[in-house]
Amino acid sequence: MRQRLALLFSTIVLALVPVPGRSAPARHPPLVLAAASLQESMNAAADAWKARGHPRPRLAFAGSSALARQIQSGAAADVFVSADEPWMDAVQAKGLLRKGTRVAFLRNTLVLIAPRQSTIRLTVGRAMPLARTLGGRRLAVADPAAVPAGIYARQSLTRLGVWNSVRDKLAPAENVRAALALVSRGAAPLGIVYATDARADRNVRILGVFPAASHDPISYPVATLAASRNPEGEAFRRFLVSDAGKAVFRRFGFGTK
Image (tube, rainbow, N blue to C red; front, side):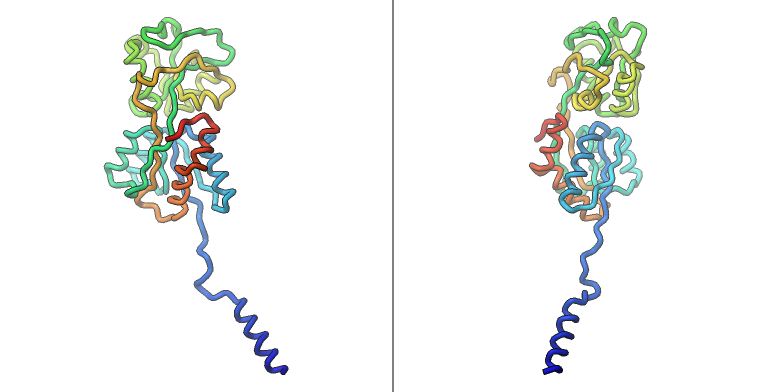
C-alpha cells in the first residue's frame, strides 16, 4: 500500500513540473510610430490594449513625413500610423509594409484656431481677409511642404483663394502639435490644425472649419511593417482597426471608417 501511495505521489509531482521548452514565450511591447496628432488617442488605445493582458506598446510621435523617412532609413519598428495616404504610399513603394495589413481607419477635419483669450473674429471661407487679420504676425501651420496637416492647409488656402496672400506670413512647424503650441502660448495669433488637436488644448479656440471639399480627404492609414518580427505589433494593429479600437479614437473626436 505504501509503495502504491509513493508511486502515486511521484506521478503527481512529475505532472506538476514544467516541461522545458513548453512554457509560453515572453511577449515584448511593439514599437508604434504614429502621427503627432494621435498623442492622446493612441495612448488611450495603448492603455486599453494593456488592460486586455498585453504588453503596453511603446509609442513614438512625430510628423508623418519624419516617421516615413525614418522607416525608409531602416528604423526598427512594428507599426506605422500616418496622417495621410501619400506618406504611407511612400513607405509601401519601398516594399516596407507587410502585405495585407494596410487599412485606412480614421478621419479628421481641418480648423482655424486662435488663442483662447483672443478677440479675433474671422469666418473661414473664400477670399477671407486672413492676411489682413494677421497684420505683421504669422500663421502657425505644420510644414506645408512635407507634413500632412500643412499640406492640407496649403491645399485649402489655395482653393479658397488666399494662399498667395499668406504664403510669406507663415510660421511653419515640424508637426501639427508644434503649430498648435505656437497658438496655445500666444506666439502666433492664428493657426491651422486638426479639430482633434484643438480639442486637446484648452488654451485655443476654433474660429471655423475648413470645407472638406477644399482639401484632400484627411485619412489615417495604419500598417504593420514588413521587417517586424514581433507578433504583438500585428495584434495591436488588428485591435486598432477593430470596433473596440475605433471606439477609443471616437472619444477623442476622430471620425472612423
